[in-house]
Each structure stands twice: as structure tokens, then as C-alpha cells.
Amino acid sequence: MPRMADFLGRWIVERQIEDRRAGQAGRFDGLAEITPAADGAVYAETGVLWLGGARFPAERRYLWAEGPEGIAVRFADGRAFHSFNPEGAPAARHWCDPDDYRVDYDFAAWPLWRAVWEVRGPRKDYRMESRYRRAGGAAPRPAASPRDI
Image 1: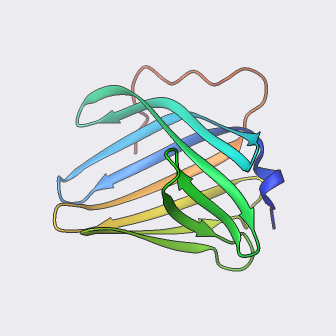
Image 2: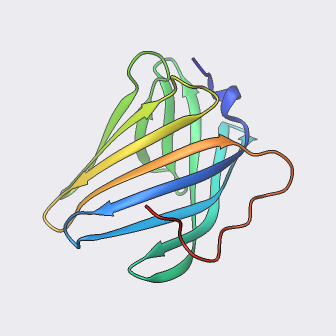
């Protein structure tokens, strides 16, 4: 199974979002770059999000650090988010009052991998599946419209 150093590099990200409460689906297409940093790595993602018939530029950033229990993921401002261990059945949970975020990672087809988030709370009820594959050459260009989801 992969170690943190194996994640370094560029990844094409394809994400499907199913908002069960709003009854709509969305999609994100982009690129994630995981680069070494003093205390681990920086995960920086950029791309295009299609949601509710609109198209938006989107980005997110996390800090990763390898520890004895796997990979600790922090928000860009340093707050704890979750940890996962690529060995076994990697899963994690993040409580953001009043919402419950649960993720299952799948590395069985490495270097293809995915993360599936289930988010529930008083105002949230969605599933988000992100698929990652190594990027070769130039960064991918998002399509002009979302693919069928």
C-alpha cells in the first residue's frame, strides 16, 4: 500500500457529488498537486465545479503529515481534519458540529485511488466520490460542460 511519498506529484481528479437533500448532482474536474513541505506535504487542488446548472472555479488546500498511525490531514490553517492509514481498510471521521463527515479511501487499484465521503447533518445529506489517477504531461483542461453523471 502507498506511503505518503507515493502520493507526491500531480493527480487528475474527477469528483461526483450527489446532494440528496437538494435533489441535485454535481461534478468537479481538476488537478491535485501534492508537493513536499517542511513538515510533510501540501495538497493543492484546482479545477471546475458544476453544481445546480452553474460552473464555478474551485480550489482547496490541505496539509499532510506522515505519522505512526498513517497520514494526518489538516486544513490549510493548521486545524485538524482527519487521519487515514493506507494499510487495511482506510477510513476516517470528522465531526464539524452539527455535521458528521465520514470518508472511505480505496487504494486496491493503486496508483488509481478514490475517496468516498458521506456527509450528514441537519442541513447536509450528500455523497461525494473522488477518483484520482496520475497526471502525465500538461495539466488537464476541464470540459466545457459536465459529463453525464
